[in-house]
Amino acid sequence: MRELIKGRVSPYYCTETEMLFLDDTFSVLKKLAPSSVDMVFADPPYFLSNDGITCHAGYMVSVNKGDWDKVSSVSEKHAFNRKWIRLCKEVLSPNGTIWISGTLHNIYSIGMALEQEGFKIINNITWQKTNPPPNLACRCFTHSTETILWAQKDEKKSKHFFNYQLMKQQNGGKQMKDVWTGPLTPQKEKVFGKHPTQKPVYLLERIIEASTNPGAVVLDPFCGSSTTGVAAKMLGRKYIGIDNVEEYIELSVRRLQQEVLHEEF
Image (spheres, rainbow, N blue to C red):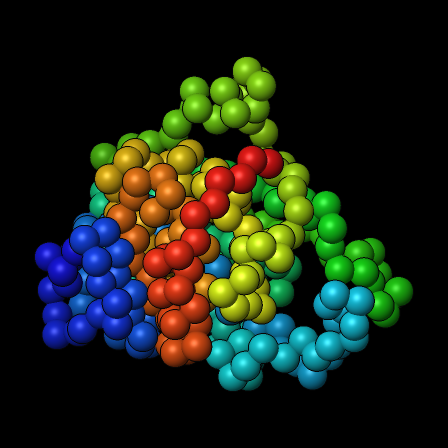
């Protein structure tokens, strides 16, 4: 895995198939080898930390997640998105693809940033959650979905991989549509610790299987608890994760060393 590093940066954790970096994602992305990654999954900050409240496990809790989830203006948010997407493009292989998850608070900036940085959007996936948190304010419809954008480089020679037959097989012999329905992350995936925006393993399994072959290199530039890495390991892919919070990198290490799961939608 160390052959994927071109600059002077040391991984926090490294095996033959996994690398974790405790650092600013911009710094690490600049030091990865160009075209060294086959797929990127990113769940960037939603910038939701505005001193509001939400419901978690039946309790009213603050929406504040940390300084990493705060931004001072729309222009600052969009500049942030363009910068990390630009750096991901440099490390992505010519036929590689990028998946980005988000809510209405950030996904529209993400979509524009992708096009501005030379990507072509392939699909707009809607992840419909079967058990979303209740709507405490009762002043709008309950937020129960997230958008996942799938994109490739907008270049004539770029030909993305799509495992059409496997996706059709997993959907009972019918073409898989762009609305995916399933529950939030179960408690059994949080036994080693929790992350405030942790994704369920089944979601990342589908994404990785749909767009890569075994042995591919998968990058998560905002890895959090490394659900991406857990799914990549289960499916025989290599994994690079980056996060700037030591608590979450330590959680990632524990999960990668001990967690073995296999879930279906």
